[in-house]
Amino acid sequence: MATKVAIIASNGSLFDAYKVFNVATAAAASDAEVGIFFTFEGLNLIHKEAHKQLPIPAGNEHFEEGFKRENVPSIPELVEMAQELGVKIIACQMTMDVMSLDKDQFIEGIEVGEQRASSIMRPMPISV
Image (cartoon, rainbow, N blue to C red; front, side, top):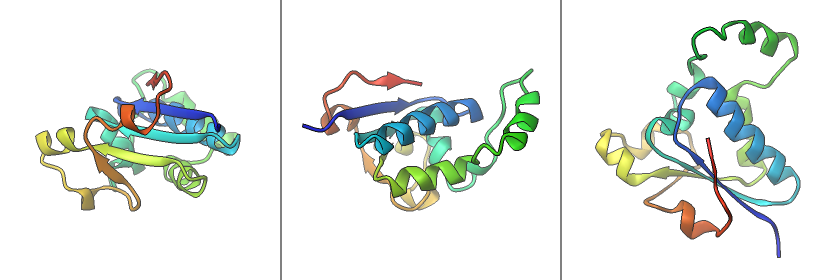
């Protein structure tokens, strides 16, 4: 039986995106079945426009220079890598409804589901 990893993304800063997509791509590259459930501010990580300009937490602006210097992939690049590795990207329908968001406002290839993180797999989720 393959290892299964479920990640819940509920926050929406640049650091949150790196945590979520680094764990997801590392696990998927190790042949794990990976699903990420995006809810509340975490939806910013897969929103067509927002994921290209995620905020760096105040006082941490110096990381931007380090990311460039160390050739760290951008969030859109990490999203693409995750999708190429077969990571399931699931947006929370309830949160989308509350925020008046439609599926077409998100990156291509997402699924929409309510309370789906628990139904994809049964691991202990990593909350970021």
